[in-house]
Image (cartoon, rainbow, N blue to C red):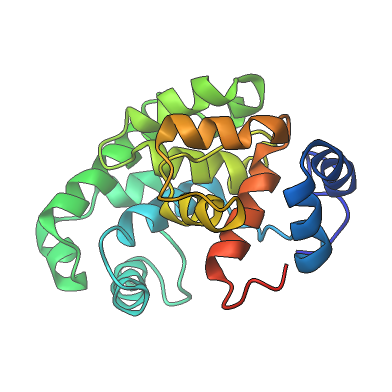
Length: 215
């Protein structure tokens, strides 16, 4: 996504202006990599299903299992509704290649939605911490998944995923740190980026993925 504004959230142009003024290293990264382009990830319930399905699996293997899983419910790769997921038997989960542990996680996610404990329509009224607390209450969803949901699904501008290895590696490379930063050190590095730490984190991923250091 390359629009100047991320839908329902913040101006990438304003974020870039702030980051360039607040941090000379970030200014160089923005000049090198161009504007932030976070990709949308779809509807919230399927996005969380995917986050659980992909845990501790290579992308290709997870994608295959997810296709088999979705095929239990439709022929057009449609994810299940919470009610459909709760009605899924152990045998059906097993036939799709979903482990017993992940089946439990998926059931707990569906139960939280069905019982109204996880109300996506109410998230706009909640702070980042409040949203994260609701998500982490679901089995199988931790801090990292909550941070990704806030950044990509809700387009929250000021999330710093200090548990993400890509962000930490990007910080080490971009700022010439001797080793991978601790959580406290990562918070300190990212402090000048506020209130656009989500965008700053996106540039750390670009640095971590880069082959050269031409920036």
